[in-house]
Amino acid sequence: MSSSTTRPKPPMVAADGAARAEGAAKNTVLYNGRQALLSLHIVVVGCGLGGLAAAHTLAKAGHKVTILEDALAIGEVGAGIQVSPNLSRLLVRWGLGEALEKIAVLPDGIEFRRWENGEKIGYTEWGPKYTEEYEAPYYHIHRADFHRLLYDLCLALPDRITLRLNSRVTSVDAAAPSCRLASGEVIKCDVVLGADGVKSTLREHIVGHADRATPTGDAAYRATIPTSKMIGDPDLKELIDYPRMVGWLGPEKHIMTYCIRAKKEFNMVLLLPDDGSIESWTVEGSADKMREDFAGWDPKLTKVLKMVPSTLKWKLMSRAPLDTWVHSTGKVALLGDACHPMLPYRAQGAAMAIEDGAVLGNLFSYITHRSQIAPLLHAYETLRLPRATLVQASARLNQKIFHMADGPEQVSRDDSMRQAMKGEFAFGNPNQWADKQKSRELFGYDADKAVDDYWRERGEKEIGWMAEKGKL
Image (cartoon, rainbow, N blue to C red; front, side, top):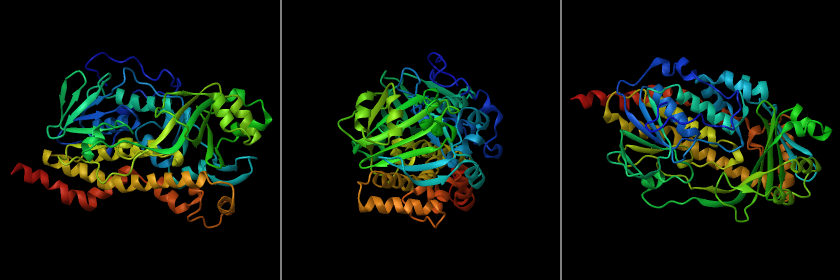
């Protein structure tokens, strides 16, 4: 990955030393070796997980990619990410399987507990069972390590990918298309992809007016703890020895925990009613206030919270689903949180953004003429918008399920989760991971297969012929 300014220092100083994938992209063949007969210049605005994924797949499809990143340096916060099978199958395909095995954790399952006493009310097995069922593993990983792996994929393609830091996009000419930077420089290209997150400026170009994120009413603390602090306590040792995602559900609040970095760190996300937090991933919260907010919860949790040295806290924001992700010119499109921000209650934000990137790369491996740009972007929207909207709704549903006040509705929820543990039919279960139909739809999805099926059934007939028409 080249830079038109100065070559950035190795990013992700917080990334684990084993989180490296140099050369992985050179050793993989995507799309059965198919590369676009027409090489485009594509600008990706934003260097997050979705932006890096899109840059990598588009470069592998034969295109030149410029990534424009506002930040002066690349960095990620200390937090965990869930890599479900719909995501991990892509990462393995991209050559990251060995690196993931070194640094990620394969959890045994997901467990739900009562907030005040830790009583187990729900469980769904993951581990090897999920790997076999979905032909891809379910991992827990540190966000910085994950970002570093995707960065390395791009770093391995310096002839095709250019990263420009300190390059804030202030406006987009969707007809040209081109991006104007804060410096006044105009960067011309063939396609602009907005991967600039929930605060996306490019989103306004798509919807045609100011479109602000709205508060969900919740905020979240994030914290990580070295497991070496926990392993000596018999009450806490089971959280490390038998790694799984453990969630405590309480009135208006819940806590999710799991191990990351080969079980060297314990990740915590604590959600509660917002009391005026700032919408930022990097604002430090008060660890003492966090402990106060969850006073009276399971004594085991109280022990863990006493070990938290510091925490980040941010306001959870959301946006209503868009009707379209593609500008009317057919040259600008959105991906990831810029068009479908995911609340953390379903743990699919990273997966959906990276699926977007995978679909874009595969679709644009078919391009042979400029007349196909707009139809391919609309095909991307056709493939991705319904799925992302469905997952957004699933996340919002969990916000309600997890935060029920103690009472009849909560008792019914807990009883239903217990029934699912017995192996009874779990369709519509409040433990959405126990709902086999939902799990098949979510985790069984293969972004590349979705494109291949689309192209065989519709794309070749509806878009492929345009290349010949364009030559007339």
